[in-house]
Image 1 (cartoon, one colour):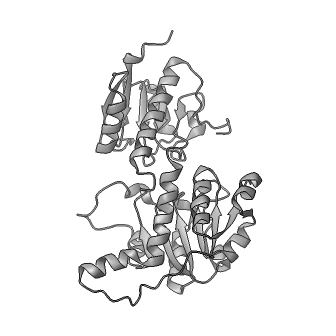
Image 2 (cartoon, helix red, strand yellow):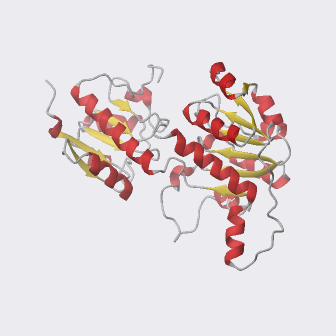
Image 3 (cartoon, rainbow, N blue to C red):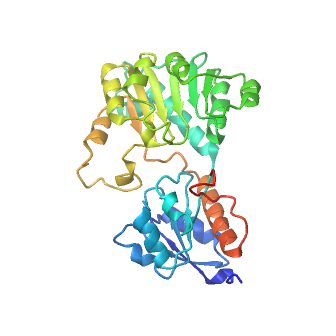
Length: 341
C-alpha cells in the first residue's frame, strides 16, 4: 500500500528564490514536505538526500552512476528533473534502481519568443544602441540592420518550440526552411514552409535557429565544415543545447565574418557558470570570455524558458510527476534508458 502523500519527503537542490516561491504556492496543502537546498547536488553533498523519498534537480546537477547508487542507498526512489533535458542523468545506471521523470514542455512560447528577441536585438543592434544613447551618443553609424521580411530562416527542429517559432517568423513574412528527423508534412503545408536537407538549410538561410535536442547525431552539428556551407554573414541562434555548436569553430567563424552574428541562450560548458552571479570573480573560461568580447554576439544565461507561465508549469508538472509516482499511477513523463522517452 502506498504511503499517504503528506509523508513524502522531497529534497530540492539548486533552489532559487523564484523556484521556492512557485513550488510553495502550489504546495499550499502541504502534500509534500520539501526541503530546499540552495546549492547543486554533488558527490560531496549527496548525503543530504538521505531519508528523502525524492530529489528535485535542475540541468546543472550531474547525476552519474555513482550518484545513482548513493541516492538509492540513501532511500531515494525518484529523481524529478524540473527541466526538459535529461542528459545530465545516467539513465542506464538509473534503470531498475531509481525512476526518473522530467518536464517535457513548460512553455514553447517562452523559448520561441526569446529566440526572436535575440534575432531582433542582433539585427537592429538594440544592445549597442542602448549603451550608446545612455552616453548621449545618438549617431546611427554601425547600427544598420535588414528587413526580416522576405529573408530566409532555417529552423532546425520542429517540435513544440520550433513550430511556435515558425508561426512567428511567417508572421514577419519570412520564407522558412525546416529540418527535422521526423518531418511533419501536414504542419509544413499548413504554414507554407517545406522540409529540406541540413545542407540546404545551411546554404540558403539568412538566419538559422537551432531548436533540436542534443543527441549523438546532433552533437557539434555546427562546426567548421557546416559553418563553411553557410551564407557569409549568416545569423546563428541557439536556444536548444550548448553542445549543438563547437564553440571554438563558432569563434573562428565570427572572426572571419562567415558568421555575421550569434545569439546564444546556451553554451557547451554552461553548467559551471549559468544561473549563478559570478560578477565578483575572474571568468576562468577563456572561450566564454572570448565570446563576450564580440559586439555581434549576445549571450543570455539559459533564460529562454524564464517566464511566469513557464515557471508555474514547471512546478505543476514536477509536483504532478511526484504525486503520480507515489500514488502508483502511470508516469507519463518518465525517462529511462530503453523506453524511447
